[in-house]
Structures are given as structure tokens and as C-alpha cells.
Image 1 (cartoon, one colour):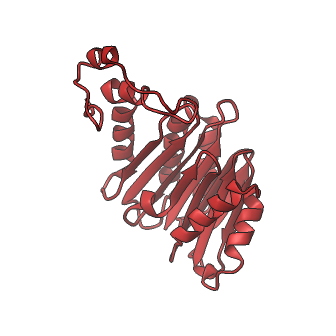
Image 2 (cartoon, helix red, strand yellow):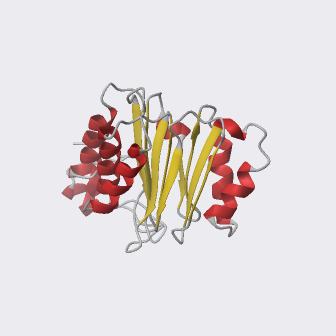
Length: 239
């Protein structure tokens, strides 16, 4: 039904994830992240958003991704129908795939990377996602988009794709949370949305809002004049 990738950028300390599925609203169902904890992807035929939050809680308390996944999944009597992957702030990874998950279903790990999928055309999808992320250049978010495209090209969700999402977090940046909830071309739409969100007036405005490292930052009057906008509670509209 879904393939996802969670990553940590060792150079910047930023964390991120991306996912795509043949169903609706993959961003809301699958991806979770906190800069104090790490990233999670909870998916499957009966995905648990509770798992996604609980594994972040466990990692924030100091457990590794692998231990957190084990602690969250073990008590769940419905776990056979679910899949969970997690990434902690050291780049450690963990995953669980329930025995009733629809094949092809599996996970892949590399330093600071975990990829999971179910109901895939084949496990080659996971290998393609990993290879594309590792081979790509540019920022973490750009590499995540390249990884999703490689997964689609390698066979994708066996039903095709209807939704896609990207989530990137870091102490020095505003959250980048982009979702395409329903589309006949979700990856192309996600790439177009990403381009609008990371260029032009919107990106300039996002560079001025609070971050964990600068929690009281705010645009000045000079910044608003430079952006050619009057101060607004919700920021300038995308250009």
C-alpha cells in the first residue's frame, strides 16, 4: 500500500521523511516527526497513528529507534496488519513488519536511513528508493523527492499512486510539511508544491519565522517591505 523513507542528515542534524501510497492522505496517516525525538512512519493495511506517536514518545524519553519500535509493537494484538519504521536523533533505525502485511513487504536500512513498504510491485522498489537517496545530490528534501520518484519507476505501490508527502525538520529551520492528499500524479504535484514552498516570497518568509534555535525570531518592518507585503498573521501567500 505504501513506501516510505526516513533519513537523518549527519552534516546538518536535520531529519526528514517522505512517503507515497495508492490510497488517500498518506501524509496524515503515515509520517510523524519531532526535532526532540526523531521520525516515524506507521503504515499497513490497518495503520496505527497511535504507533507513530508512541514511538516518538519513546525515542524522546531516550530509547533507541530499534528498542522503541519493539516496545510499541509488542503489546498490540492487531500488529500483524501493521508496519512501523523509526529513526532516532543519532541516526539509529528500527522497523517492524506484521506477518499479515500484503507482499511485497519489507524494510531496508543504511546509516541514518530506513525504508519500509508493503503491497509493492516487488522489493526492488525499496532498493531503488535507497539507491536513489544515496546517489542523489542537493538538499535532504530534494534527495527525498528523488527517492520517491525512483520508487515509482521501480514498480511503486502495486495499485499505482494517489497521494504523497514530505516532512523535513531541523533546529535551524521552519518545518517543511507538504502533502498531496489525492491526485492522479501525486509525485509531480508534490515536486511542484515543493518548488513553490522553497523559492520566492514564501521561502523568504519561512526563513524569518521562529525556529528551535531562534524561538523569538520575527520579521521586521524592513523585512516586510523587502517582501513587498504588509504584515499578516499567516504570512504572505505563495508567489
